[in-house]
Structures are given as structure tokens and as C-alpha cells.
Amino acid sequence: MIVSIVIAVIVIYLAIDWLTQKPNNFPPGPPTLPLIGSLPFMPRKLVHYTMAGEWRKKYGPVIGCMLGSMRMVAICGPQEVLEVLRRDEFQGRPKGDFFKDRSFNKYLGVFFSDGPFWVEQRRFTLRHLRDFGFGKKSMQDLIMDEVEDVIKEITKKETFQANGMFAVSTLNVLWGMLAGTRYSRDDAELKVLLKKLTRNFRAGNPAGGITASLPIFKKLIPGIIGHTEAMESLRDMQSFFRKSIQNHKTTIDENYLRDFMDAYLKEMNIQETNPDTTFTEEGLITICLDLFAAGGETTTSSIEFTLMYMVLYPEVQKAVHKELDAVVGQNRRPTLEDRPNLHYVEAVLTELLRVCSIAPFTPPHRTTKDTQINGYSIPKNTSIAICIYSLFQDKEHWGDPEVFRPERFLNSEGKYVKDDWMIPFGAGKRVCLGEVLARSTVFLFFTTLLHEFIFSVPEGDPPPSEIPLSGFTIAPQPFRLKASKRF
Ligand code: HEM
Image 1 (cartoon, rainbow, N blue to C red):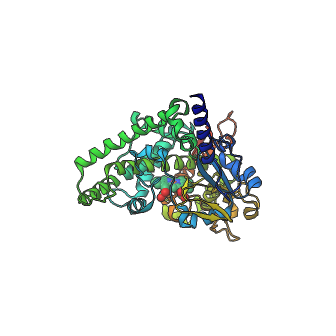
Image 2 (cartoon, rainbow, N blue to C red):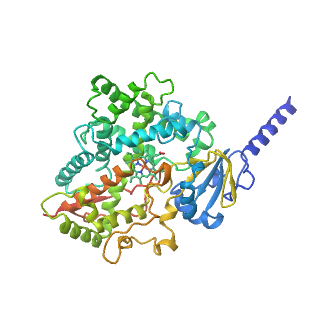
Image 3 (cartoon, rainbow, N blue to C red):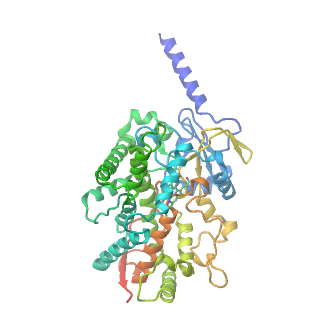
């Protein structure tokens, strides 16, 4: 009996050991232990600093890790990042419970799906976000409603906590496009939803976290790793979207589409008899979740960062005021049409995207066939972490990447010049679906708020820290602002 148990233990150990070993010619990386692979050596916070810094120096730009039995390759060199984003076989998304749990045990939505399903859903979503013209309001109108709301709030307060001021606004813009309604900043339901979204984000790890690496942990010790809690938040968000969908179903007029939900429900009806339809109610719920998760926190943090840097660099703020006065004047609000004429503003916003690097890694990609990069073998179904941040911090390319210097994007005539390495929204087939919306939202918030106010650090407060909070994406640490009317 004892002998059989010992043999069984040895066999299981060897099988696990074999599963967690690196494949032949796999890229170099941190050591690998039986069962847990490289997990003990993985950075816990601000992963991009370690991977694009110390690890890149030690292992090179292509780094191989074993997260339990899951192969993961981190791409941390600028040329390699650009190459991987271009190559088709790197455009899958990882498979596994972690990515299905969030969408009814299937691969739905646009964020974590791939193949023909993803192509169809992405195309539909993109078309309806880009051509957002149905309903009564344009994208610019929706954003400006929120800007005006924030201006009222700031005027009332004068000194305010920056974090938390804009989250309702950015979600309202998204919700306006998705479901045609907005929430007041005091709405209890929205406040709870926001708290859950933020918590899930800050607890996130770009590599997928321990449940993605060792799914068994989720079953053994769900409480310890917070998986159950994260799933509860997710279910709450799904019910929130489902309620709104039910409401749309009872009020839809297919000849007068009010928002994205109407457009999707109409497509569901058109394809009702198609046995291969990819348009389902669960799919719609997952797209809502994807857009909230991908668009809310990122855009909110971007607006917070823009104001934070204006108080840290008052001379830049002054130059922005000067350009706004010259181009927009004092008698009207800035609009998206002003954008091509606001060269300095464009340079400041681009430099902010570079130094802040809101999404230092793309969400994980997956290889869809056996392939190679820099001579290393990457087997099919390897998870790929792409470090966009490495492009933004390359000494050779930027000269002084650690310095905040918007002028690097201006030519000798003061005109804005594009740089091909500035891809904060990714590139290629998986490029951010909300890029136009995010850029427009940040532009309108930034220019209108700076047009209206001078921002400074409240007396007695320390200057905000440039060291960000960790998570799926980067956010500023809590800080307060003082706003004084300009005119
Ligand atoms: C400053 C704000 C934002 C930044 C920096 C950002 C950045 C990114 C990046 C780097 C990717 C990854 C591309 C890849 O996997 O290779 C991405 C994907 C995505 N983003 Fe954004 N994003 C922002 C705002 C938004 C907004 C407002 C929305 C929603 C309307 C959105 C929706 C998405 C979606 C759905 C994807 C997945 C696309 C796919 O896999 O096909 N993002 N974003």
C-alpha cells in the first residue's frame, strides 16, 4: 500500500515537473521550480519596471517564464514589440477558465475572444462606436455634457480630491453610447459599480495573476486569492447590464436606434434564425463589460494624470493657457475642430501618454501556431505579454526618456510631429477599440478644464507623486487639486 502511494506521488511529481519545464529553445528567463514554475520570481507590483528594466538587461528583450504549467513570454524590446504586434500568429487571446469565467463560461465579447467570432464582434462594435451618430447626440455632445457637469462640481468645491472626480464622467460617456442614459454623480447604484470596477483593476496583474497560472488554486483556496470576490463583482456588473438590456427590449424602435444596445438587439433579431449567429444577449452583456472595464479606468486615469502634471509643471500649464487663448479665445469652449491648430496641447497630451504609460502591457496575447522570434521557439498557445512601455523609455530613441518634455513632439516651427513609436493604444489588428473615443474625451476634458481654470497644489499639501499605482493599468496615487477661475 505504502509503496503504491510513494510510486503514485513520484509519478505525479514527475508529470508536474515535466509540465512545468521550459520547452526546447524557449527564451531565457527567471528560474523554474517544479509545480510552480517561475511564479516565486515574478514581480508583484509595477511589473513593467522590472521586466523592461532589470530583466531585459539580464535576459534580453524576449523573456520566457513558466507560470505554473502556463508558458508566458514577455516581449520587452521596442523592435520586438513592433514586430509581434504586426505578426498574425501573435494575435490570439489566452484560453482557460480565468478568461471564460467572466463571460458565462464561453469566450464572448471583444477583449478575450479571438478567431472569426472576435472578427465579427469587433467589426460590429467598432462600426457602431465610430459612427456614433444615431440617437440625439454626437460623441462630442456626450463628452461635453460631462465636462460641463465637472466644471460645475469643481466651481462649487474649488479644492477637491482629483481621484474620483472624473470616474463618473467617463463611465457616463460610455454608458451614453451603450445605453443612452447618464447617471448623476450621487447615484448609489453607479457608485457601487464604480467601486467594484476600480477594485478589480487595481488588484489585477498584467500576467493574469495566480488563478490564470494555477487554476487549481481557484478551487482550493478561493477566499485567499480573492477570486470569489472578483467573481461576485462581475456577476453584479452583469446584472446591471442585463437590467438595462431588458429595458431596451421593451422600448426598442428598430427604425430609430438610440444607442449601441438598440443596434445590437436589432442585429440579434436579424440573425435570429441563423444557427451560427455570434449575436446573443450574453455576448452583448460581455461587450458592455469589456468596454466599461477597458475604457472607464484608463480614460479616468489619463484625465487625472493630465491635471497632475500641470501642477507639477506650472510652466507647461502656462504655455497651454497661452495657446488656448490664442487659438480658442476667451468667449467659447474648445472643440474637437480646434485640435489640428493646438500643436502645443497635442504635444503635451502625447508626452503625457508616453511618460504615464497608462497601459504598460497590452492584455495578454496568445500564439495561434508554433513560431519563432529572435531565433527562439515559441510553441502554439503560449501567452504573450507585450510591454508597450519599453518603447516609451528607450534611451537611444528619446535621448532623455525620464524627462517630461512636450517639446520633443514639436518641430522648429512649433508644429506637432508624430512619432511612430508612440503607440499607447497598441497597433495592428488588436489596436484599442476605443482609441478615438479616449483621445477625444481626454482632449475635451483637458482643454476645457484648462481653458476655465488655473490648477495648483492646495496650500499645505505635498506635490502629487509621479510613482503610479499598480494594476492591469496604471493610475495616479490619490492627490488633491486647487482650481481658480481664469476669467
Ligand atoms: C487612455 C485610454 C486607453 C488606453 C491607453 C488604451 C489602451 C489599449 C491597449 C494598449 C490595448 C491593447 C491592444 C492589444 O491587445 O494589443 C487596448 C485594447 C482595447 N481597448 Fe483600449 N485603451 C484606452 C481606452 C479605451 C476605451 C475608452 C475603450 C472603450 C470604448 C477601450 C476598449 C478597448 C478594447 C475593447 C480593447 C480590446 C481590443 C481587441 O482585443 O480587439 N479602450 N486598449
